[in-house]
Image 1 (tube, rainbow, N blue to C red):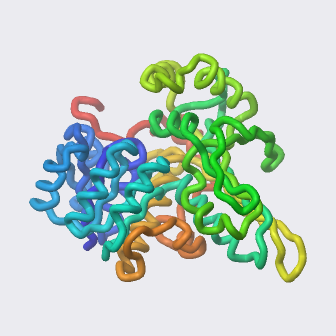
Image 2 (spheres, rainbow, N blue to C red):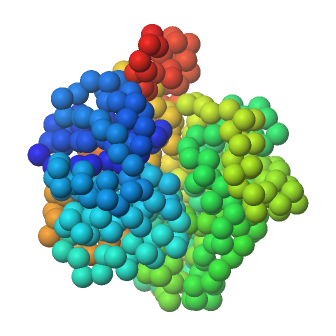
Length: 389
């Protein structure tokens, strides 16, 4: 049995903990500063291999006491990005493997420093973007003798947009604002450069539907460092419905809410509804030379909400959970193969898709699941709240 401590009982981890616990060879301890939040997830899954505990992962002393009292092999952090340095240091101090979902560049640099010389794996930026998008990009890059351009695009969108933003909240609001407001990285003329968020606006058409894409922070992961010197151009952009970027620029730049993110968070969570009826679009385009000829290869995938263990899970939950659990599964299955700081591009796409958890990237193509479950009144039951039936 792989013993795992999962920190944070948010939307994504509600599925991560269940996938691991249901696998049969994981013993999962789910911890949250709110013991009831963790317990509500554990009750909903109702598995002997999943337990809940109240724990403030931001407190180094409390985290250390928990790890000493209940030893584990690995820690998975889904805490806000600014908490992950504390968690990574605890993992290093206790000789544990470490995985997180952060998109924050500075936190990843700090994790890399902590991981130096470690005999266990430190794998930040798991999930979708960064994470799976880097794995997919790396796979296509490996097919080319010379690289010209690498375009990485990901979007988590409502299937049925009906507001001015043409958007619904599908994951962490703090993470969303972080992506929209922090500097971005790209490769230009074989050099890693900094780019402004919400710039580089472009149109992109996929399966006959027109979208827009623009710079956001963190999605490039370490791919630019790995292949930048070989590539003329590489960038990551977020996919949205047309018009979204203009509205976000108004909020972030014109109204100066990038300097008052707590207010922006309250505004978004009060005005923009959550949804389980979303779609995740993954788009990779690599151009370069193969056998002396200029060619382009694409990886394009649309993933829809899926029914797992009798409950509806959004596409962003499915893809992010599948991304991190597949990497955790491979990392713990071959602990000697991954040591110190591990980049996402060290995992191969065919192996991820063939993994029991990564298979959800290929199994999530049925767009009718969420509609059927909503009609049947079976959506929105991911937690078992005390007193709620």
